[in-house]
Length: 466
Image (cartoon, rainbow, N blue to C red; front, side, top):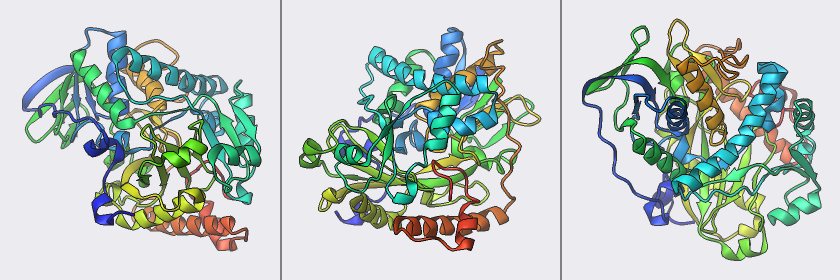
């Protein structure tokens, strides 16, 4: 490993030394202005929402405000998995009617084709590769954890998953630490930094007034006015698309919990990738807190793990961007999962905020007592689904009479996380229990009854505690 101080907080996708594009920041908001639509948040969701509004209403007058620069949050810090929502089929059926759940899952599949087509048309070189996704079992206890999801997907009219034997999965990924898997063909990998900057340029070319380094300090919900340090925007329709940062709002504090996910990237490892992982699938294991990995266009391996830092009262601090203790932990876990990468130098290590909900699905609707629209809660799977939820936001904002605006999915779920400080203290206890449960599972031994009961209280992941 390189000197840890030189790699901590260094995001592969945003690093010019690793080939990331550089761009000049848009101007900051200065003065009081008006617009038909004001979108707060310059990540995938906000940018796609602007594009969807313009597709439906080409003369739409749109202002987009970003606190720093577009892509500086989760959109530029994720692992670049462009996935569908089929892996959450069981949860979808609990949040919406069967018809609406099926529409969402199918639309999330179509969204990947839309991203590929948009990038081709706009000249966005983000390395889009429909290489598929392997949902793996990296411990015997994880085998078959996907079966309920496979059945739920089939009940919605989909059959995206193909079962893969342990032998085949090991050969495909170049590691013996796999005990079975299912494969989803319609799943892609991208360079999220290049994608978000490409979307940023696309909305600017279409006339959206983009202001960066313009953090919103207050929201007048009744008057649809947002205020920054140097100005304000009055609009007909306010759309809040800041994802994890929406947990700061009192109305949403008990339905969204910001946690961090952490990732490392190796130096280029062409010798390994020439002989292994040749189909370039992304993979995620079935742990309660998942590990994930993928190859990159410049022949590196990105490896990550979820649920490290936990926000108190929704406040996102520096731990959500730089988490030095996790660098060594992830570097060690990388070699445990893929032993053939022993000796490969880790060149980048970074963190990013993840907006978790109780069921791992986004929430979308209007803030209680307000006309302001919002969407958040992608739980690490926002690259692809953000296209679908941007369409829902656009339909709601335009008052369209379509299936998206009328979807039974729209609205804040009834569940609530406990109030602070109970939630924060409880989350720390649950996180510790989940880690102990995962360690016991990996070692083939049972967890204590208390550990198991606490771990069961965590938000839904790919695998339920059992």
